[in-house]
Image (tube, rainbow, N blue to C red):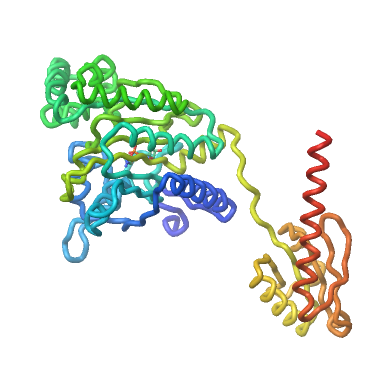
Length: 440
Ligand code: HAM
């Protein structure tokens, strides 16, 4: 029975009391991205497994240890997406978006699945807001994407965060570096975890990103890619730093950032915090020139990032960020008797069609219980409809906070009278707020 009433490990419900905050961060992030020219894309939750093997890389932790992969009824290998980039690349190629106007700028909000050990800020189903920019090779694109990530975080009230930057080279300079790295780790082969022993031959850079404590320790003293960049990668990195300086975006160089996914070249970056525990990387991204081609598209460069929304909410809380208050009920219409209840339903419908939030009794409660309910839900106004109101054609509408009352006509005139009433309240509330502000 416990299985029926408990969510799978590493998953979370987003409750009605929390969904307003989610809407707020999602809308804000998407609308900031829109100002940079990004349009939202929605891709399927699952893709052919092959897509992630080829893009994320078959020597990464994500592919080797963390994917939710299964066979469908026609024996196809299917994987729940562990991240958003691969699906966007696949969809952009499949739908011919890369043959049109460039650069192509895509934003997205996705749920992702990774079979990881759950802890604070680390889930098996989590959510990302991300962007991908295709077809711009120069450092200007890197700077713009980083500027967008920074703006999204800071405009959501995140303060306790730092931008960490690195360059991990390209196919020209990386092979030479990989040789040095392999030689270094070979000297310590006995200390590596079993997975990394395999990576020694196939992809020694992955060892730097391994989560096992022994590999982490060894990685500290390993040679760094940033000391082995070719002149083109050097120039690209210098160009990016110059642009970030010009934009006034602070950063620190961290030669240890390699990122956990195989598709990155040149620029990689993370926004990290120490305010939310061990899982402090709130945003990760970088350049992935070559990925589009690997997946079967044209030879176009790409760069993007993703912000983990659960971690974003944690760091917002740690930064004391504020959320807009939830929109409450404008009017609670209490009713006594069947005829009044029917009239209340009709008025409620009319008002809702005009954008007001209105509630009426649906459970046959006593008048006293209806008023208690109105109080609990924080209704701005309440009104009681009974036989005498129906007969007289008017109803008293009470301001629940201020206590004042106004008599409004029932029937066709109610909507505009209520509109006037609530308008005057918002005007006087605004005046009160301004007066309070003036006194402070
Ligand atoms: P990533 O670094 O694997 O990059 O994930 C991006 C963000 O997703 C992380 O910084 C973190 O906030 C969040 N995240 C990752 N795993 C978990 C988890 N198990 N639980 C909660 N949050 C998590 C990518 O996914 C790349 N696709 C980013 C990118 C886009 N690069 C270029 N374009």
